[in-house]
Amino acid sequence: MGKIKHAVVDTGPLIHLAELQQSNILHTLIGQTLTTPEVFDEVIPSQQKLYRKILLLKTLSGDGKNAAAFLVLHYELQLAEATALILAKEEKVKLFLTDDLDARTVAKRLGLEPHGTIGIIVRAYRERLLSRDEAINKVSALQETSLFITKDLIMWAIEKIRTAK
Image 1 (tube, rainbow, N blue to C red):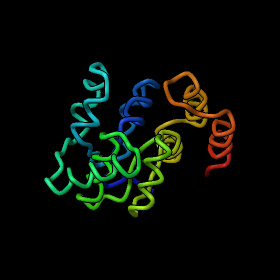
Image 2: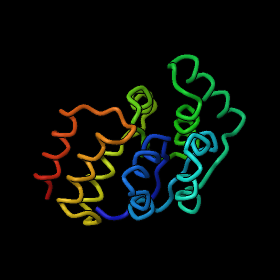
Image 3: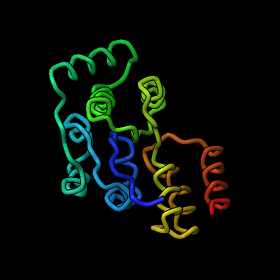
Image 4: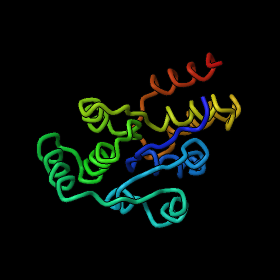
């Protein structure tokens, strides 16, 4: 598999990886992780400190800001999510990291590949950054973070880890 060249990240994975004490995974898995100032502002200051050297903050163009406003109005997205989606389009980055279901839906409509915190953890396991037990423990620990996640999704992810090669 190897290192991912670049990705755009929304607020959710930044918060949830920090809550799991795994903020370094993004830097290890991805060559360049981009986001917008609007996303970065949603991350609490102690978490911002963790990500300040890892993330490349980019401001949208004027047309990009208009496109983000359109997404907010028509898809009921938050401004941060909308700016991150438009940044991915402006920068021609396919991989979009988000834990928000509505943002995933819009990402797919925009031709992006959305993945969330679980996908990041599974990828870290496949890249041998986490052992099988560490990955299973991190996925299980997501229930104790601010991420809304069902037990069924946790069990599905654990099964993915157990059967991954």
